[in-house]
Every structure is written in structure tokens, then in C-alpha cells.
Image (cartoon, rainbow, N blue to C red):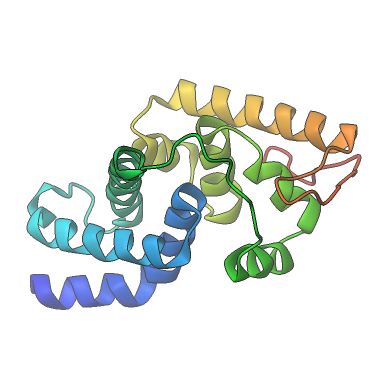
Length: 181
């Protein structure tokens, strides 16, 4: 297949899913869309590095995650007023995400550290296998399984405690609904 057609097909199939992954890192819809667009440009330039042409999604996720991390790193450098306390106002993206997923589980997942949040999102919401998830995150399969198990345990503890999320809304579920498949 011609590279241009292949890229167009990937954009049609994976754009929304990749934006969701990017959003979990950058927490801003427009920045997430920018990251995904940059990732597609990078994928276009490096398409010959793709080994499993029939399964491009994990490779694309890896590119998006790398771009997210670079964006976050660059954003921290650009931040001028580091000591001014940030006032957290729920964005329309936050509201939409809470409505589209179980509110309590979403808040709990978003409260996890990146290293535990991303395996849960990729495994449960993006239906990636442990092998694909490990590749996308740039870690070994054993580490991916460990992070997934620890993330589930932390999420369960968060939800049992009935903590509140970053917007001050409380959640208190006894079960996360996330169990090994």
C-alpha cells in the first residue's frame, strides 16, 4: 500500500483513540490533538521502522506517548509563574470524559501516577494485549503486568477510601470493575 494512503487510513481509524491517549497525558484537548498530528507526521517519516505492518496501533501509541512526554517537558520549561497556585476548573473535556466513562473509575484512574494509569487505559479501554501495551510503553512484558496489577490495586484502594478527585468531587465505590481479563 502506498504510504500516503496508509497514513490516511491510520488517521481515519486511530485518530480519536490516539487523542484519548494523548489527553490522559497533557489534559488539554487542543494540545492532545496537536500531539497526535505531530505523531502522524513522525509516523509518516518513519513508517519504514514499523515491523508489524498489520498491527500499527501499538507503534502509533508509542510515538504519541513520546510526543506527549516531550510536550510536557517543554511546557514545564516555558512556565513562567511556577509559584502561583493553579486554580483547577473542570474543562469541557473533563466533563465529557467523566460522562463517557464511569465517573468514579475515571476519577480514580486519573488520580494514578502515569506509570500505573497508562497500562490500565491501554489494557482496559484500548483493548491492547499485554505485549502490545509493553511495546507501546517501551517496557518489558513483566513490567507491564506488574504495573497493571499495581495500578489495579492502587485504584481499588483509592475507590474504597472514598477520596475526592482533583475537582473536589468525591467518589466512593467498593469495586473498580477492573479485573484481569
